[in-house]
Image (cartoon, rainbow, N blue to C red):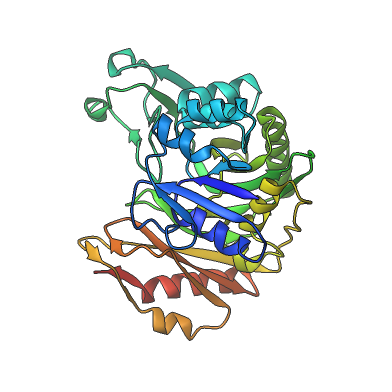
Length: 368
């Protein structure tokens, strides 16, 4: 099959790396000439937000998908009309890429998410403090999201269409990845616990399986079922969740694609999220998602005050460690907070896993 992916970043790269064991032609489009997918696919330098670029790229493909949701959906609707298979379907991509539509989707389908107000500009704000402001479009990796704690912070409200959302008293941040193929078969990966870097507001490391009660697991299973039924589309979806201190689970947001919270599946599960997504795109039987033990993932991100040609400090020490797996993304330039790779770790207990992750974090720096 000729499979086209909008976006040429690390998610697409790892998908294609996994799928090279099969027989398909891979095509990617990305604005960056040296995008991570450029060397391992039929690569087009182009803008996945531009109607003509996306439409021209999609023509002649057997299936078209995404590794970033901020794409031109009008072109995807048109391509779907012309008979090209688009996974996930353009309707759910459009819903998820706009925070306002995403929140209305949860409300309509009675999927638990925090109370909210929709505003078109800052003058419409009448939401009780404290709250989170999420820009309607364009946010990712901690960008486009800010906490408004007090009257003074209100001065910094972005004057753009946004969702204002109640702050959850968070006990844990969790994620579940659920896949559905065109035959209607669904599979979920074990729930993962996510630990964020408070300074960068992006994922620092994952712990799998998450340490949660049976009741919390039941709540998450119900949310995953509700979402996949409501989305009504084949695809692979990462549902990011908050567990509050009273034991209730809330949906934070959903990604209609491969996700950072599933990277440890490469080495810690019977099959990875990348294998699963490939099978979704081909409408094959879905893969076994069973965890083989305790696994975790540490993001490698650019250090503060370093920009330029990337250097990885401490990787040799990491490579001496047992059950430790380095995955680099082929990005030549580093900058503060940029995701450059990750390290997966396996262990025999949760405590040992955390010790290893913290130790590895102390060893490695991404500099220039």
